[in-house]
Image: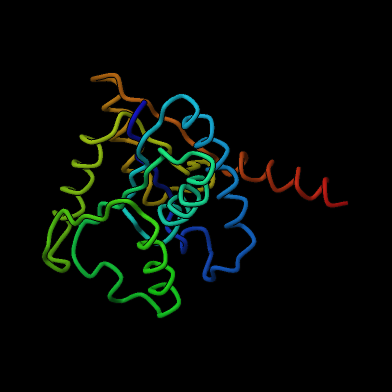
Amino acid sequence: MKNLLVSGYRAHELNIYSQKHEGIAYIQKALTSKLITLAEEGLEWVITPGQYGVDLWACEAVIALKSQYPDLKCSILAAHANMDEKWKDDRKEYFQHILKGVDYYGLVSKLPYQGIWQFKARDALLFRKTDGILLVYDEDAGEGSPRFMKEEALKKQQEEDYVYMSISSEDIQSIADEERLYME
C-alpha cells in the first residue's frame, strides 16, 4: 500500500474540547503503531480530510514519524476554502501549526462552504487517490461521522482491491490501560 486515507471521529464526537485532553495521546499512539507497520511495508503517503479531530492528530503523528521514516509524507485534502473559519482561535493555531508540517495541502473546492456536495467531492477524491483506509471508528460506541467513510470503504473493498482497517475504542483503551500499568 502506497497511499493511505486516515480519518475518524471529529473531536467533539469524542467529547474532546481541548488539545490537552489525555485521550488524544492514546489515539495518536494507536495511529502511530499502525502507521509504523505500514511505513515499514512501503507506505508513502498519509492523506486526511483535515477535520479537527482524528484527521489532524493523524497528521501530527505522521509529522513526528518523519525523523524515523523520512520518505513518509502527509497530505490534507480539504473540502472547501476557509475550513477553519469558524473554529476557535486555539484550534486555528493548531491547524496552522499542522499545515507547516504537511507535504501537501489542497482544496477540492476553492470556494468557501457552499454545500454537502463539497464533502462528497472530497471523499470521492480521497477514495480515488488511496489504496486503503485507516479509520478510527467504533460502531458499538455509537454512530458518528466516520460511518459514511466506513460504508464507502467497504463498498470499494467489495468492488476492487481496497483495504479497510480500523482502530476501535477498545484498541485505544488497551493502550491507555497498558500505559497506566507501566506507570504504576
